[in-house]
View 1 (tube, one colour):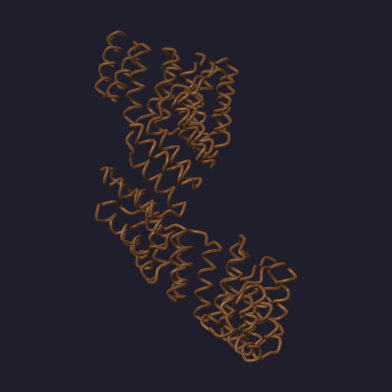
View 2 (tube, rainbow, N blue to C red):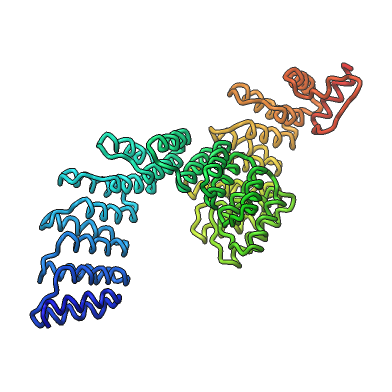
Length: 549
């Protein structure tokens, strides 16, 4: 077979996407002493890449390097595309280095292809090194080059560098296009710089670009990430008025902004509006709406939305379950949260740390301390690290069940697990458990042992002392609050009065509390209102009323 006939047959097979037969023809022709031309090899490499055989495409290039014909710049670019399709960005970089070492000299198209490969691998440092190589080789980056660099920086969690690169484009004589602005606005969201996002949105119009749905969505998302729900809604309205159709991404971003801004009613209004506009909500939309209800203490509404997902055949994911469980945990029936947790196993939905923490917290409210301990064990089995909230919820559940010794055991386990388990949340939970168990000595010791403490810590220790009428110790704790400039709240005075019940010092403490504006409902001497007062409060107030009023 002649070289011309071989080339024609290879091209014909490649057009039919028969890469295996094309490779066979190339191998047979080489064995017979004839060889296809470069363009035929290029088509064969491209056919292999399209057929998911990127390794064979690279092998074909290697064969050309040894036996000919000499690969040109188009061949290398096609091979780099093949490496990119196989997520083999290091190989793409190696091919670039081969070109720089043996020729042909890579141009901006080749460099952009290699950059796209590193973009997929989130290798932002490598991308910046490739940009340096371009300058060394005298290759001038174009707008696509800069867009790829900015995108890989933004996606790799380097939004500050992404924006810095954006700012340097015009200085280097390259004007940003709409894609550039869209990526930069997205970086503003990750950098939590909503003002810059809005400024870029306004700037691109002055440069002759018309915002598209991606521009609007990125701006709404940037505002939402920074809890600027009003700006997010303003841009959603602007999107509608400009004739750009508001899609599910725009609505989901706006609902998420309202959720972060504690605007549950507006979030639900947006969900209703998108249904009226025949925009189908997705799992992200529902998850954000459920989370908005959770933050608004609307556990019934959250549960209704969660069930609605099943009715419209939208599969709930980890985030949806997490939001629903968190909402139910705050409701009057925390066992619903446990039921949802169990359903996740039935539906093979993976659990994250937030799901476990919310469910453990539900155990605290459901008085199921044994279940809380089981869930902590399951976290370890699922290779999830229990944090301060995990342990504090389990400790609180143990404390409410009067299992103060279990609470101390959990605190010990927490410290052995490493991390900042001297966290004030964990310590306060353990002191509270000791308080409910009447273990005032241990509570007092923990207060002295841990440097980080707040008024909750002090109040819990005074309440523990009150259980055993250790009024002198409680008074000393109260005085140390003042010495350490820890705020003495109404709860502090109440805990101290519980400990001082029947002691002469109680009258002086009550007068001090009343001077600070606490117990203001006692200002009318004609009415002795004892509602909402603790036993110590009542004892001190009645003695004061009988003696002074």
